[in-house]
Amino acid sequence: MRLISAILVLAASTVIATGIGYKTAEARRPAVLDHTRVRSAAILRQAESFPDGGIFLIGDSITEFAYVPLLCGRPVLNAGLGGSRVTEWQGLVPKLLADAKPSLVIFALGVNDARRTTLAKPDAWQRDYARLVEQVHGARVAIMGIQPIEPDKRIGPGFDPALVAQLNAKAQAVAGATHAVFIAPPASPQTSDGVHLNEAGRRAWVQRLAAAC
Image 1 (tube, rainbow, N blue to C red):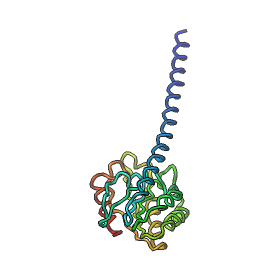
Image 2 (tube, rainbow, N blue to C red):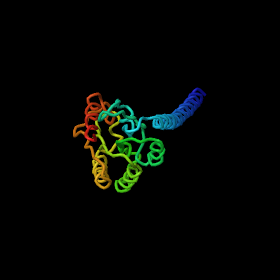
Image 3 (tube, one colour):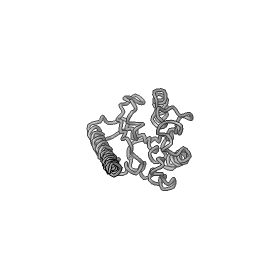
């Protein structure tokens, strides 16, 4: 009887734990979606009142975490959207530029396209990136290459370093075809977790942006 009771208790606890785990995973998805919605709305609001002739820096969490108030002597709108990929900016860029007149638009995208869970197809990715760049009118364009991955750090194993190299070659081809400036990323990775830049990495990244001036 005690054995049956123990089995029932174990089964019940497993069901409860599974349910908690499911709810936790489900809870994460709305959190990510909420961040995307809130952050993109804030970026669009800033763009509406941003001074003409400024610089728009469009990217993912690497951009979002960066502090770049000025570049080339001009104010910078940080349009970093954590978790974003190239295709997710297709609908946002026209809205971003609808009432704004930047002198320079810098794209710094691609690392999330190299996630092992959502690996991009390089040729299709190149076409998508070219279409994104072609949505910019009346401003110069620069493309920042994807930062190297450190696969031995915490979240590094979730990304494909070989694909990053392929996508960088495609990004350079997009820059050549669209007459954009290609900014090569630092050769050596400087990250805190395998993907996101540490303090030294952020300084080097910002210094690289000056190549677009």
